Each structure stands twice: as structure tokens, then as C-alpha cells.
Image (cartoon, rainbow, N blue to C red; front, side):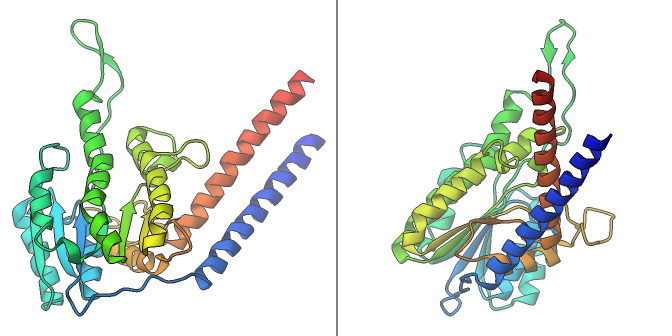
Length: 316
């Protein structure tokens, strides 16, 4: 009992210390950061956004708020054409002086890249911002079950995994491949890779999260590792590669009202754009999410430490 109380006190004290330290570090980095300059080149620069727009979520808000900053928009999405046109008109009414071009593609397919290249090549040299927001999240992931022949099957088939890789990984690689050379040549530009907070928790469909971000320190997912390495390579050419990790948000498709831990997409993107700087490679983009992730990190780290201590005690 006495040992348990000591361990509990150490655990609580360590957790509080880590939270204070990490919070202090992020505040210090925020106030001393080298901010990214939002240059529009007198309205000639373009922002290229991929992924879902019509839900009024992160993709739409990035498009809207970058248009408000004066950037012309290229939107590449798999959303229905009619709904996409409605969102385009909403942005156009707020920002009548920006140009907006739309291309509809299914990023799960692999035969789309020649058409995308032609679409972008209209003004490749003036693409100043790329927002890689494309993702493919499964509608449901069933348990393993036996089919009529007694063979073990699952909904996560080869097609599902191919679609997952094409939408979540290949879209980021190929879009970056299309715009990065001109950014390096012009010595300016910003690439924002949107990842996922889902991989911070174990559960169904975690394969989606593992393609997007990292589960604390235990494994590196592709997008996070790719972005981190590319960031270091491109700094010398004045091109910023930045990773954002949003979680759930209150959008037009959700019936929940915005709260502290469920911000509106507009509030999240406003905050996320303010965090973009040259001194860090990745950010949650929203302080309450950072604090939550820190607490979860502490719990998982201390739980692992507790398990190791118990194993050592049993051996001794």
C-alpha cells in the first residue's frame, strides 16, 4: 500500500511536470518563432488545395481563408460537382477578386496524374502554397469473419488497402512532386501536409491513422516522417514543409455545436495558420488538442514505465 502511494505520487508529479514543461516550451517557441510571410505577389500567387471541400471542414476553410489573404485557388477534389460549385460560389462572393479553378478527380485511382499535371501546368510557377488534405477514411471496418467456403475474409481487402495508400500517401507524394520543383527554383513556397490525430489511440481503422501520423515515439508513420525529412531538405531553398494534425471538428455534417475540444473548422484553421513558422516542423494547430495529446502521452509513457517496473520487481 505504501509503495503504491509513493508510485502514485511520483506518477502525478511527473505528469504535471511534463505538462508544464511541454506547455512552457510551446509558448516560448510561439513567441520566438520566425513567422511565415504570406506573400501574394500582387494577386498572382496560387494556393492549391486537395481533398474534401463540401463538408465545410478543414479543406473548405483553408481554401476560404487563403482566398481572404489574396491567393487564387486551385481546388482538386473528389466531391460532387454541383456541391463543389456551390462552395466555389460562396468563396467567390466573399473574395470577388480571386480566381478559382476546380478539378474533380478520385485520388484513389492511379491513372489521374497526367490530367492533374496538365491542370496545374497552366500556372505552375505561381503555385505558392500546397495544402495536402486528401484522405480516405473507411466507412466501417468489420471483424474478420468466415465466408460461405470457410475462408477467413475481411472488408479490408486488397482494394481497400490500395485505395488507402493512393489517397493518404501517394496523393501527398505526387502533388508534392508536381509543385516542389518550381518552389525550389523560385526559392519560396509552403507545403502543408494534413495528417491525423486518430493514430494517437488504438482502435478500429487505425490503419488510416498509421498512414498519416505517428503513435507517440513508438513508430513513425509515413507522412510524418516524409514531411520531417523533406522539411530539412527544403529549408536551404526557402521552402517550408509543415505538418498539421487536426482532430474531430464541428462541421456542417455534424450535429454537434462547437465546444472547446470540438472547434469549428473556421476556428481551427484560423489558429493553425497562425502557428505556421520556420522553427518547427509540425503542430497540432490548436492548443487544447496539444494539451490533450500531452496528457495522453504522459499516461502512456508512465503506464509503460509501470509495467517495466513490475516486470523487474517480479524478476528480483
